Structure formats: C-alpha cells, structure tokens
Amino acid sequence: MTQFTDLGLNPALLKALKSEGYETPTPIQAQAIPAVMAGRDLLGIAQTGTGKTAAFALPILHRLDATRKPAPRRGARVLVLSPTRELASQIAESFRTYGKHLGFTVATIFGGVKYGPQMKALAAGVDILVATPGRLIDHMGEKTANLGETEIFVLDEADQMLDLGFLQPIRRIVSTLPKTRTNLFFSATMPGEIGKLASDLLNDPFRVSVTPHAPTHERVDQRLIFVEADMKREMLSELFADAKLTRTIVFTRTKRGADRVAKHLEGGGVPAQAIHGDKSQGQREKALAAFKAGNCRALVATDIAARGIDIDLVSHVINFELPNVPESYVHRIGRTARAGATGQAISLCADDERPLLKDIQKLTRQNIPTEDRRKDRALATMAKATRLAGGDKPEPVEAAGDRNRGRGRPAHQQAGNAAPGGGHPHARPRNAGGGQGQPRGPGQGRSAEGQGGQRQGGQRQGAANGGAQTQGAQRQSGPGRGGETAPVRASRPSWHPADA
Image 1: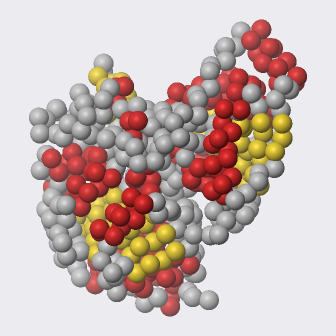
Image 2 (image 1 turned 90 degrees about the vertical axis):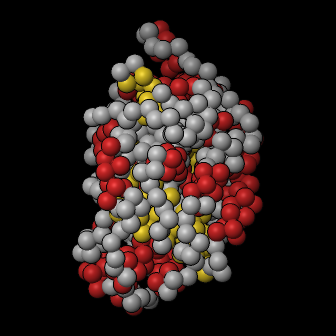
Image 3 (image 1 turned 45 degrees about the horizontal axis):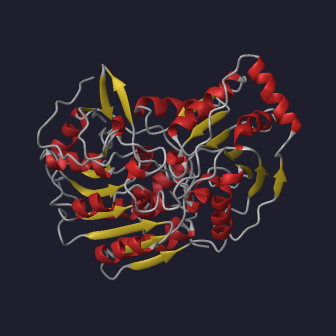
C-alpha cells in the first residue's frame, strides 16, 4: 500500500503529516500528487470526502518550496477559487496545517467581512490566495488585486460554481491570469458546461476519477417518510424525541425556511442554530462553533452546508425539504458517516416533492426504504395541541419550484437565494463589508449557497465575497475530508453575483 513517504514529498510536509497522524494517502491523493509535483495540469473527478484538498495542497506546497521567490505585490503565486466562504476558510487552513514548517503566507478573500484587512494582505502579496469569485473581482476592479504573476490556478468544486451562476465571473478571472501556468480542476460531476470550461482551461491534463459507482455512501442508512407538507414540523419534533439524534444537520431549501425550522425546534426544547447566506460571517462561525462543541443538537441549513461543513460525529442528516438539484441530496447526506463512522439520513417528502424524489432515485439508482405518515392521527393531534397552546401557525412549505433551478442559473434566481436586499443582482450593494484543512484533511469540506446580506446601521451589507486574513479559521479534522465599513467606490463592478 502506498504511503506518503513513497511520493517524494518535501520532508517538511511529511513532518506535518506525521504530526497530524496521516500515513496513507487516499486514492485521489496517491494518483494526483505525483502528477502535480511534475507540473502537469490535472482534471480531478471526485466527490466530497475523498481527500481533494490535500491532493492539490501538498504538491503545490512542495513546488513552492522548490522554487522559492517573493510573492508578487497585490497578487499571489497560487490562486484557489472556491464557491463558498466556509470552504475557502477550510482550504486555507489545510494549506496552513500542511505547510506549517515552510513559512508560506496564506490569505482568504470572501464576502460578508471587511475589505481593509484584505487590501492590506494583498498589498504585500501572498504565496497562496484562496478566494470566492465575486469579492475577488471587486478587488480586481479596485486595482488592489493583480493576478498577472500567478503560477498555479486551482478551481475547486467547479460544478457547484456552475450551480451558483459563477461561470462568467470565473472566465473573467481566468482572462487576467498569465497564459503559462499550471491548472488544477476539480468537480464532483461533469455536466456539459463544466466539461467545456475544463477543455478551455486545461492543457493535456492528467485525469483522475474516483467517483464511486453508487454515489451515496454505503455507510449511510437512508430512510424516507411521506408526510403532508403542513405536518413536517410535527414530524421533525417526533424525530428529535429520539435521543440518538445527538448532532443533526437539518436541510431546508430556503433561508427563510431554515429560520422557521430552527425557531420551531427551539420552541420545542431542542437547541438549534440556523446557518444560511443572510447570516453574517460572524453569525455563521458562531453557529458552526456551537454545533461542533455539542452545544446545539440541530444545525438547520440551506445547501450552503451541503459541501462546505466538515464536522465529525454528525449522527443524522434530515432533509426537511428535498433539494431541487438531485446531486445536492448526495452532498447533503455525505455530511454524516464520515471518517469511518456510520450515520443515518432521513428525508421528509410531501406529495408535491415526488418529482424531486424521482430525480434523486434516478441519480442514486437506489430505492430508499419508505414509511407513510400521511393522514397520521398522532401528528395531527400534536399539531392541534401546539396551536391550542399558542404556537405559531404553520407556514406554507416552499414549493418544489422550477425543475431547472440551481443548474447553471444565476445565484439570484435560485430558490431562497435572492440577491442582497431583494433587488436585482446587478444592483451594487450600498455598503459592502470587508475583512478577513487532506489527506482526509483539515478543512476539506464542501458547501453551497450563493449569497447573503445583513442589515447593519440601517444599510444593507452585501455578503458577497470578501475577507482576507492570514490567520486561519478553526481547524477541521482528518485527511481525506479533508470595524470599518468600506467606502463606496464608483469603480466597483455593478453586476456582483453574491458569493456565499
């Protein structure tokens, strides 16, 4: 069996891996690392949890050390594009963890935080820049970011970038990169538009594919419950009466729905936190920290968490609403049964969601064991008691919606992902904030949702990409997973697809 010591990696990297307890590379790491070390372009097809981050971070760090030179002013030697804030933070932390004995600088650029620290980090130049597309383009427009000397370009979760409507911004960023560079392209799936983008970017790439025949994890015990839409909250309360649901992620389709479900759980005595694009970066980090520490049993999330949260010991995933994009189901349930553990995924399906269920079954090639709780007297009695006690009236469940939603359409057109302020995405936010791991690697999680925005001091703050800090986010575990307000500037791009 291949060991990391067999791959010819820099001794400082092997020392860091040993201190983290990593000895054996995952299949994608064993294949990709030698190719990237040799300077080849790479096309990697692999789902979350396969070790993609270390598959590119380790050989990149090896190459940077072999050709040491100052980082370019207002630029970076390595650019990694990520679809969401959480994923960007985790990738950056992976680079810091593996490269802790090499001394390279790492910065993140994403939305929802202050511009000042980002500008300061970029001014001196950094070795490795991990960014989300929209805020990076803001900096390019402000002339505070110059990518003309970038040597290695990594596009991670390309299919999710397409889902969020970032194809045009990616092409705009790539157009500013030098023609002579190394390109590393990773995607869990390869729809037509992603295949075309890959062919445009890559030059005679080395191909690695570790996509399993069955896309859902064999250790995830799946269960499907048919229930009326207006009985779903009572069904959820019944599920949480089971003490086995110790650390559970509940997925909704919309941001407003996530807030409602979290409020319902809290009202029933279940500690819960909501996380979605309208939450500030600080609120999102606080919710994640509470969930990781076990201070809340339920993390209620939109698909922002489907590929971007790498947390051990998630006992259950509950699909309160089925996703509009069937691939999102695979990524959602992949949040449990990680690091060799087992887990359970429970999906609540209303009659109007049956077309979504059919799409999921077609993709996964699985018939999920079902239970029919429609016209259930126990749930009806529970609902009646809740209303008599003065509980909230049931909110209408969001409809399944357009079958094309979430696939190659702009983020503002997707369910629950309205542009900041509820307006057109081309409208510039009035005030934007700025500011600031795989083997199964620290920080290799995956997530998806395109934006946010928050009211602060009477103004809308866009959660579009921002935030550069050279200090890392909290470490994630295991390889293979793994106050000033910026002034409004006339030159800031006006189209601005808001990142997560």
